[in-house]
Length: 390
Image 1 (cartoon, one colour):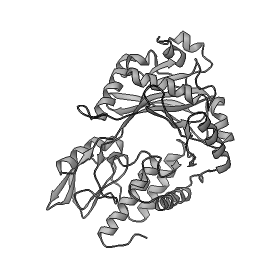
Image 2 (cartoon, rainbow, N blue to C red; image 1 turned 180 degrees about the vertical axis):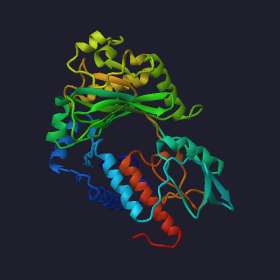
Image 3 (cartoon, rainbow, N blue to C red; image 1 turned 120 degrees about the horizontal axis):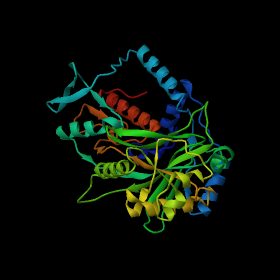
Image 4 (tube, rainbow, N blue to C red; image 1 turned 60 degrees about the horizontal axis):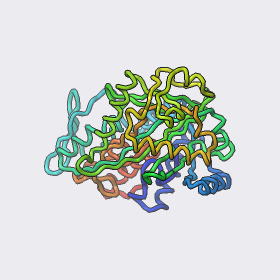
């Protein structure tokens, strides 16, 4: 988890910097009380890494970070659910919300499969999987939305030793490196670094998939992987970044024969597809086995391919060994960000008793950001009732 106002969304859109840091501290304390490890931040070491990156033309963002692990997270969430249930919160699993009914400029009830609930307030936070439903629903109610940028890139896998210095010496578990590429001046970044982790297949929706990565606290591999993403913003006539990203994912899925594509960086640079024979000659064994050797450049626009190559070459100045012929690339890795719903700074929509939060509303990108926006919205509801948040 990353505790920084401008990582995982931008809390400064909703409050000043001092308030944002206080909110992040509150969230960290909450997770620690549930069993998560306390966030790590060794400022001297991180400042040295920041200086090293700056000399290479790369921006490094020092962040307080806590690594829970994909194997431990369900335990933490389970404890959270139990705590909320003791406070009277009712969870209804397996229930599909169908519609929000408005009367007199307010949401009067929530319709779901099997019935409906009358409501005084609604806080809609359906997550990324529910983003299209939420956008469609609020648009029918007259709430304005706008497209967020999309991140398109690859999952990079290297021998773990290449990142060990960054992770263990500089104490940066999920280092955030930001780069502007020479040719197009496009923004490229590292994301979701998984030290000694595993590359996995991830379904975006039915019939559409990509790749991701994760690390465990109890199990480890010999590799480290991370997302390397190019930020893409679109204007007229095609502003729909969701559609653009899905088309690229569909082409990549098709070229891979229903599997993610894997390619050596050296083959991508030499404009040739990878083969299993070439991959076996690498210094690294892929952690994701259900893949197809191929050519990512057949699916991705030239501009994005150029950005990835130039970005990795620049990153190699900070993390030597990344820009290596045998480095493995998996595609597609696409971060779909929901359309951003227009709200006040308290996350209140034009429908006065409808508040939104989280990734599904386009106001966060990750666990900590989603938690923060949920709290902001809850406090907004209290203010609407004339109650000062504690």
